[in-house]
Image (cartoon, rainbow, N blue to C red; front, side, top):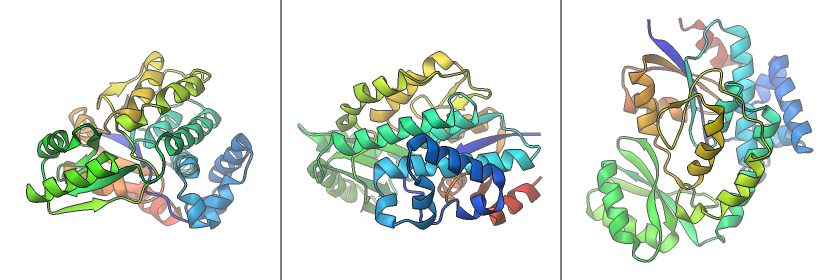
Length: 310
Protein backbone atom coordinates (compact mmCIF):
# COMPACT_ATOMS: atom_id res chain seq x y z
CA UNK A 1 0.00 0.00 0.00
CA UNK A 2 1.30 3.46 -0.93
CA UNK A 3 1.81 6.29 1.52
CA UNK A 4 0.23 9.74 1.82
CA UNK A 5 1.69 13.24 1.55
CA UNK A 6 0.09 16.44 2.81
CA UNK A 7 0.68 19.41 0.49
CA UNK A 8 0.01 23.07 1.16
CA UNK A 9 -0.79 25.83 -1.39
CA UNK A 10 1.02 29.09 -2.03
CA UNK A 11 0.12 32.62 -3.02
CA UNK A 12 -2.64 32.91 -5.61
CA UNK A 13 -4.95 30.41 -3.91
CA UNK A 14 -6.56 33.03 -1.66
CA UNK A 15 -10.20 34.09 -1.90
CA UNK A 16 -12.54 36.10 0.34
CA UNK A 17 -14.44 33.72 2.61
CA UNK A 18 -11.69 31.12 2.82
CA UNK A 19 -11.66 29.22 6.10
CA UNK A 20 -14.93 30.71 7.34
CA UNK A 21 -17.00 27.51 7.07
CA UNK A 22 -14.21 25.52 8.74
CA UNK A 23 -14.02 27.97 11.64
CA UNK A 24 -17.80 27.96 12.08
CA UNK A 25 -17.99 24.15 12.05
CA UNK A 26 -14.91 23.00 13.93
CA UNK A 27 -13.34 24.17 17.22
CA UNK A 28 -9.83 23.17 16.02
CA UNK A 29 -10.10 25.58 13.10
CA UNK A 30 -11.49 28.35 15.31
CA UNK A 31 -8.55 27.91 17.66
CA UNK A 32 -6.08 28.32 14.78
CA UNK A 33 -7.71 31.56 13.61
CA UNK A 34 -7.80 32.91 17.18
CA UNK A 35 -4.12 32.02 17.62
CA UNK A 36 -3.28 33.78 14.35
CA UNK A 37 -5.12 36.94 15.40
CA UNK A 38 -3.24 36.89 18.72
CA UNK A 39 0.17 36.25 17.13
CA UNK A 40 -0.18 39.15 14.68
CA UNK A 41 -2.15 41.47 16.96
CA UNK A 42 -4.85 42.04 14.36
CA UNK A 43 -8.03 40.45 13.02
CA UNK A 44 -6.50 38.43 10.20
CA UNK A 45 -9.50 36.09 10.47
CA UNK A 46 -11.86 38.93 9.49
CA UNK A 47 -9.85 39.64 6.32
CA UNK A 48 -9.98 35.91 5.43
CA UNK A 49 -13.70 35.61 6.07
CA UNK A 50 -14.99 39.01 4.89
CA UNK A 51 -12.26 40.72 2.87
CA UNK A 52 -12.08 43.23 1.35
CA UNK A 53 -10.40 41.48 -1.57
CA UNK A 54 -7.91 44.34 -2.08
CA UNK A 55 -6.63 43.85 1.47
CA UNK A 56 -6.38 40.08 1.03
CA UNK A 57 -4.34 40.52 -2.17
CA UNK A 58 -1.54 42.45 -0.42
CA UNK A 59 1.39 40.05 -0.16
CA UNK A 60 2.04 40.89 3.51
CA UNK A 61 -1.56 39.83 4.29
CA UNK A 62 -1.99 37.08 1.70
CA UNK A 63 0.89 34.98 3.02
CA UNK A 64 -0.18 34.72 6.70
CA UNK A 65 -3.82 34.39 5.61
CA UNK A 66 -3.19 31.35 3.38
CA UNK A 67 -0.92 29.82 6.03
CA UNK A 68 -3.66 30.19 8.67
CA UNK A 69 -6.34 28.58 6.51
CA UNK A 70 -3.94 25.76 5.58
CA UNK A 71 -2.99 25.05 9.20
CA UNK A 72 -6.67 25.17 10.20
CA UNK A 73 -7.55 22.64 7.48
CA UNK A 74 -4.71 20.41 8.65
CA UNK A 75 -5.84 20.62 12.29
CA UNK A 76 -9.39 19.62 11.36
CA UNK A 77 -8.35 16.77 9.06
CA UNK A 78 -5.69 15.40 11.42
CA UNK A 79 -8.22 15.26 14.27
CA UNK A 80 -10.74 13.28 12.22
CA UNK A 81 -8.67 11.01 10.01
CA UNK A 82 -6.52 8.02 10.94
CA UNK A 83 -4.39 8.77 7.88
CA UNK A 84 -0.98 10.20 8.72
CA UNK A 85 1.45 11.77 6.28
CA UNK A 86 4.73 10.10 5.37
CA UNK A 87 5.90 13.43 3.87
CA UNK A 88 4.77 17.05 3.69
CA UNK A 89 5.51 19.71 1.08
CA UNK A 90 4.30 23.20 0.21
CA UNK A 91 4.46 25.48 -2.80
CA UNK A 92 6.60 28.54 -1.94
CA UNK A 93 4.79 30.10 1.05
CA UNK A 94 3.17 26.67 1.56
CA UNK A 95 6.51 25.29 2.76
CA UNK A 96 5.96 27.24 5.99
CA UNK A 97 2.53 25.61 6.40
CA UNK A 98 4.20 22.23 5.82
CA UNK A 99 6.78 23.00 8.53
CA UNK A 100 4.00 23.86 11.00
CA UNK A 101 2.18 20.61 10.13
CA UNK A 102 5.45 18.70 10.68
CA UNK A 103 5.89 20.50 14.03
CA UNK A 104 9.22 21.94 12.90
CA UNK A 105 8.11 25.49 13.77
CA UNK A 106 5.27 26.94 15.80
CA UNK A 107 2.23 28.56 14.21
CA UNK A 108 3.08 31.90 15.84
CA UNK A 109 6.66 31.84 14.53
CA UNK A 110 5.49 30.83 11.05
CA UNK A 111 2.91 33.63 10.96
CA UNK A 112 5.40 36.29 12.04
CA UNK A 113 7.95 34.93 9.56
CA UNK A 114 5.63 34.98 6.55
CA UNK A 115 4.26 38.39 7.52
CA UNK A 116 7.84 39.67 7.45
CA UNK A 117 8.61 37.69 4.28
CA UNK A 118 5.60 39.17 2.48
CA UNK A 119 6.43 42.70 3.64
CA UNK A 120 10.08 42.40 2.59
CA UNK A 121 9.05 41.00 -0.81
CA UNK A 122 6.67 43.90 -1.41
CA UNK A 123 9.42 46.37 -0.46
CA UNK A 124 12.27 44.73 -2.41
CA UNK A 125 11.25 45.98 -5.86
CA UNK A 126 9.39 49.25 -6.60
CA UNK A 127 5.91 48.84 -8.11
CA UNK A 128 6.08 48.40 -11.89
CA UNK A 129 9.78 47.49 -12.01
CA UNK A 130 9.25 43.73 -11.79
CA UNK A 131 6.81 41.29 -13.38
CA UNK A 132 5.89 37.62 -13.62
CA UNK A 133 4.27 35.62 -16.42
CA UNK A 134 3.05 32.05 -16.84
CA UNK A 135 4.35 30.29 -19.94
CA UNK A 136 2.12 27.51 -21.27
CA UNK A 137 2.97 24.80 -23.74
CA UNK A 138 6.78 24.75 -23.78
CA UNK A 139 9.18 22.41 -21.98
CA UNK A 140 11.00 24.03 -19.04
CA UNK A 141 14.42 23.62 -20.69
CA UNK A 142 13.27 25.81 -23.59
CA UNK A 143 11.81 28.43 -21.25
CA UNK A 144 15.05 28.57 -19.27
CA UNK A 145 17.19 28.92 -22.41
CA UNK A 146 14.98 31.70 -23.81
CA UNK A 147 15.12 33.60 -20.49
CA UNK A 148 18.92 33.47 -20.59
CA UNK A 149 18.79 34.85 -24.14
CA UNK A 150 16.33 37.64 -23.23
CA UNK A 151 17.93 38.82 -19.99
CA UNK A 152 20.75 41.02 -21.28
CA UNK A 153 21.82 43.28 -18.39
CA UNK A 154 18.50 42.68 -16.62
CA UNK A 155 16.99 39.74 -14.75
CA UNK A 156 14.51 37.23 -16.12
CA UNK A 157 14.52 33.57 -15.06
CA UNK A 158 12.30 30.61 -14.25
CA UNK A 159 10.56 31.18 -10.92
CA UNK A 160 8.15 28.23 -10.69
CA UNK A 161 8.30 24.89 -12.45
CA UNK A 162 4.62 24.16 -11.81
CA UNK A 163 3.88 21.32 -14.21
CA UNK A 164 5.53 19.97 -17.36
CA UNK A 165 3.84 22.47 -19.68
CA UNK A 166 3.59 25.44 -17.27
CA UNK A 167 6.60 27.43 -16.12
CA UNK A 168 6.39 30.85 -14.47
CA UNK A 169 9.07 33.43 -15.26
CA UNK A 170 10.03 36.48 -13.17
CA UNK A 171 12.33 39.47 -13.34
CA UNK A 172 12.50 43.05 -14.62
CA UNK A 173 9.26 43.95 -16.39
CA UNK A 174 10.99 44.79 -19.69
CA UNK A 175 13.01 41.56 -19.64
CA UNK A 176 9.89 39.50 -18.88
CA UNK A 177 8.19 41.20 -21.84
CA UNK A 178 11.17 40.45 -24.12
CA UNK A 179 11.23 36.85 -22.99
CA UNK A 180 7.48 36.57 -23.53
CA UNK A 181 7.80 37.68 -27.16
CA UNK A 182 10.64 35.21 -27.78
CA UNK A 183 8.73 32.39 -26.06
CA UNK A 184 5.69 32.99 -28.26
CA UNK A 185 7.97 32.88 -31.29
CA UNK A 186 9.39 29.60 -29.96
CA UNK A 187 5.93 28.05 -29.87
CA UNK A 188 4.44 28.86 -26.46
CA UNK A 189 0.67 28.41 -26.53
CA UNK A 190 0.21 31.39 -24.23
CA UNK A 191 2.25 33.79 -22.12
CA UNK A 192 0.04 35.18 -19.38
CA UNK A 193 1.13 38.18 -17.26
CA UNK A 194 0.37 37.48 -13.58
CA UNK A 195 -1.25 40.07 -11.27
CA UNK A 196 1.44 40.00 -8.57
CA UNK A 197 2.92 42.73 -6.39
CA UNK A 198 6.54 41.61 -6.87
CA UNK A 199 8.72 39.32 -9.04
CA UNK A 200 9.06 36.35 -6.67
CA UNK A 201 11.71 33.61 -6.77
CA UNK A 202 14.32 35.44 -8.83
CA UNK A 203 17.52 37.42 -8.22
CA UNK A 204 15.57 40.66 -7.69
CA UNK A 205 14.45 39.24 -4.35
CA UNK A 206 18.06 39.21 -3.03
CA UNK A 207 17.44 42.21 -0.69
CA UNK A 208 14.86 40.09 1.15
CA UNK A 209 17.38 37.44 2.23
CA UNK A 210 19.39 39.30 4.94
CA UNK A 211 16.21 40.84 6.37
CA UNK A 212 14.44 37.48 6.52
CA UNK A 213 17.59 35.87 7.93
CA UNK A 214 17.35 38.21 10.90
CA UNK A 215 13.73 37.16 11.51
CA UNK A 216 14.33 33.42 11.07
CA UNK A 217 17.39 33.54 13.34
CA UNK A 218 15.00 34.12 16.25
CA UNK A 219 12.94 30.98 15.46
CA UNK A 220 13.62 27.76 17.36
CA UNK A 221 13.30 25.14 14.61
CA UNK A 222 12.67 21.54 15.64
CA UNK A 223 13.39 18.38 13.66
CA UNK A 224 10.33 17.79 11.43
CA UNK A 225 8.23 14.85 12.65
CA UNK A 226 7.95 13.81 9.00
CA UNK A 227 10.35 14.84 6.22
CA UNK A 228 9.60 18.06 4.33
CA UNK A 229 10.23 17.90 0.57
CA UNK A 230 11.68 21.36 -0.01
CA UNK A 231 11.19 23.72 -2.96
CA UNK A 232 14.87 24.39 -3.62
CA UNK A 233 16.17 20.81 -3.46
CA UNK A 234 13.04 18.82 -4.37
CA UNK A 235 14.24 16.31 -1.77
CA UNK A 236 13.16 15.38 1.76
CA UNK A 237 14.70 17.22 4.72
CA UNK A 238 14.31 16.16 8.36
CA UNK A 239 17.28 18.12 9.76
CA UNK A 240 16.26 21.09 11.94
CA UNK A 241 19.67 22.65 11.35
CA UNK A 242 19.03 22.99 7.60
CA UNK A 243 15.52 24.50 7.70
CA UNK A 244 16.53 28.17 7.92
CA UNK A 245 19.06 27.97 5.06
CA UNK A 246 16.53 26.17 2.84
CA UNK A 247 13.88 28.84 3.53
CA UNK A 248 16.37 31.60 2.73
CA UNK A 249 17.46 29.90 -0.52
CA UNK A 250 13.81 29.65 -1.50
CA UNK A 251 13.46 33.46 -1.67
CA UNK A 252 15.59 33.80 -4.82
CA UNK A 253 15.51 30.15 -5.94
CA UNK A 254 13.05 28.44 -8.27
CA UNK A 255 10.11 26.47 -6.90
CA UNK A 256 10.84 23.01 -8.33
CA UNK A 257 7.29 21.74 -7.89
CA UNK A 258 7.37 19.20 -10.73
CA UNK A 259 10.40 17.54 -9.14
CA UNK A 260 8.84 17.78 -5.66
CA UNK A 261 5.81 15.78 -6.79
CA UNK A 262 8.03 13.32 -8.66
CA UNK A 263 10.20 12.89 -5.54
CA UNK A 264 7.11 12.13 -3.45
CA UNK A 265 5.96 9.54 -5.97
CA UNK A 266 9.41 7.95 -6.12
CA UNK A 267 9.34 7.70 -2.31
CA UNK A 268 6.17 5.60 -2.52
CA UNK A 269 3.48 8.27 -2.15
CA UNK A 270 0.28 7.35 -4.00
CA UNK A 271 -2.09 9.94 -2.52
CA UNK A 272 -1.81 13.71 -2.03
CA UNK A 273 -4.07 15.55 0.41
CA UNK A 274 -4.08 19.29 -0.33
CA UNK A 275 -4.83 21.26 2.83
CA UNK A 276 -5.79 24.91 2.42
CA UNK A 277 -7.66 27.19 0.04
CA UNK A 278 -8.38 25.96 -3.49
CA UNK A 279 -7.30 22.96 -5.55
CA UNK A 280 -4.34 24.40 -7.45
CA UNK A 281 -1.82 21.80 -6.29
CA UNK A 282 -4.23 18.91 -6.94
CA UNK A 283 -4.61 20.10 -10.51
CA UNK A 284 -0.86 20.45 -11.01
CA UNK A 285 -0.19 17.03 -9.48
CA UNK A 286 -2.58 15.31 -11.87
CA UNK A 287 -0.65 16.79 -14.79
CA UNK A 288 2.71 15.81 -13.29
CA UNK A 289 1.83 12.26 -12.22
CA UNK A 290 -1.48 11.06 -13.67
CA UNK A 291 -1.77 8.04 -11.36
CA UNK A 292 -1.52 10.06 -8.11
CA UNK A 293 -4.79 10.24 -6.20
CA UNK A 294 -5.53 13.82 -5.09
CA UNK A 295 -8.09 15.17 -2.63
CA UNK A 296 -8.37 18.59 -1.03
CA UNK A 297 -9.67 19.96 2.27
CA UNK A 298 -10.78 23.60 2.50
CA UNK A 299 -14.32 23.46 3.94
CA UNK A 300 -16.72 20.95 5.58
CA UNK A 301 -17.94 19.55 2.24
CA UNK A 302 -14.43 18.83 0.90
CA UNK A 303 -13.44 17.44 4.33
CA UNK A 304 -16.33 14.97 4.17
CA UNK A 305 -15.27 13.84 0.69
CA UNK A 306 -11.61 13.50 1.74
CA UNK A 307 -12.55 11.43 4.80
CA UNK A 308 -14.69 9.14 2.64
CA UNK A 309 -11.76 8.25 0.36
CA UNK A 310 -9.96 5.17 1.72
